[in-house]
Length: 611
Image 1 (cartoon, rainbow, N blue to C red):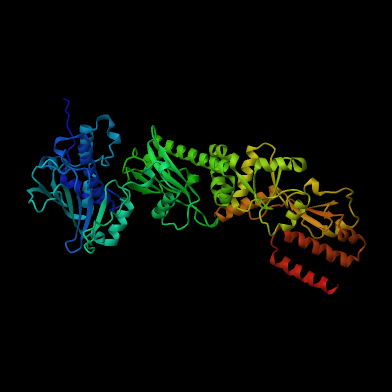
Image 2: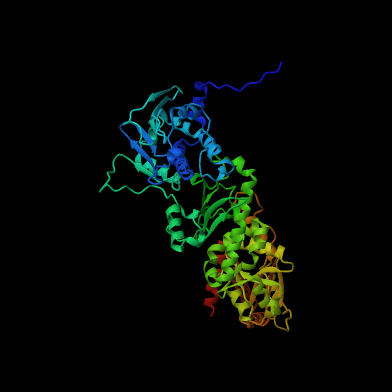
């Protein structure tokens, strides 16, 4: 025998679940109740625009929502002057859990265009969030149709009563939700706490919201300013927004006194349908937190901070707002991770950021260069994480020159073609590597400055992308242009240095064009990169080898008088000079170890004593 039916739920069983598990954050109750109030106003405005009989005489103005705190009565009241409800509608929408009035309204008045109605509620559970913090809730409502007002009262166990409502008790039109705070909800009987919640969740709701804390008095019969911005900047057309408005919006939303580097106004229609503004913040230094803050909204209602699934990982340092009306209001991580809509938004944002960077570079390169040091870490990390982002931005990637100014990779390679084709020489520290830099510049070789940890990883990415291009630190290899002719090994000199250098260090003789430098210590690019990588792994707490063979070459400059004189010098004096030369070479490469430094200072004093 086949039977069919519906699942029955006892109210005394479901209410405890609602109180404890409806939302993970209890403070969301205020967002839900205020959102419902805004919906009530939006519905009435829609009926006015449609010419509904009962709404024809109602002016489409003066609509608002009021949140009132009464500490003595331990109540929070949310009142709107919107559509209101009849007794029949109260029984239908309030007395039955999860029967959404918003959906009924959309189906009746909007038809297929319901998705564009701007009505927030789509679930019917939001109202019951009030019971997470209330021992009882009163609903006092008067329908726009002129029907008699109604009062609905419900306790935390789900038992309700419907009463006739006196004319004085009910609002002139609309609904008042009176929440009597339970012991758990008493933390919300605080002016500052309620303001904080309202500013967090309701800052951009589409209906003016006023907060009455029981202390503020109206002066000169003037209405106080609403706590929200009903027409936030991100909903406007970019062409209607000024630079000053963008900056003020940034300061207001993120409380950052520093001006942003630039911003991107997003306005996507079919098939994505979302709005927003993204800002590139100004970072003081590379050790400052790079985590930004992107606020996600649903039809102007705050949903969450930093929904990482909507913004590509490498753009998480951005600050901004995104309003995505096609996302559910109570969005979950699992939904976001598997949503095709979210994936398309992420791709769209990536494209817009890349387009903006290219546009700035092409239209005003001096201004772009002026902010490049603030941008480079963001952009380089994005290129490392996403090859498509690299392809879209590669033409506007800049490198800082040690001599000052910036250049693209193509510009650098073109200028170096005649001297060192496809080789890019760079320094990581202009001070400690100043000697090497000056040697290169003396021969007309430009050096780039890669002074951040990510720079060398980015250089390796370019080597993989650009066939034949090689990045070499200035202390890794001598360019051919720096070498002269006539180099030959000086008898006995190599033996002096072999006693000083590690076994794996090679000794070479070269006649350098710069005769002032007696010797140069080069560490191979591969060895140094491996060492840097191990240091990075160790800093991240991962196990890594602490030492490994370093491929180094000590180049003795036969064109330098000091090196040339070592063969004929007193053996003791020659050994002391060789030791000092090698110590200076080490010092140009790295900081000396404590014992090395003590020896270097002692030898220096000995040499001074013999002058």
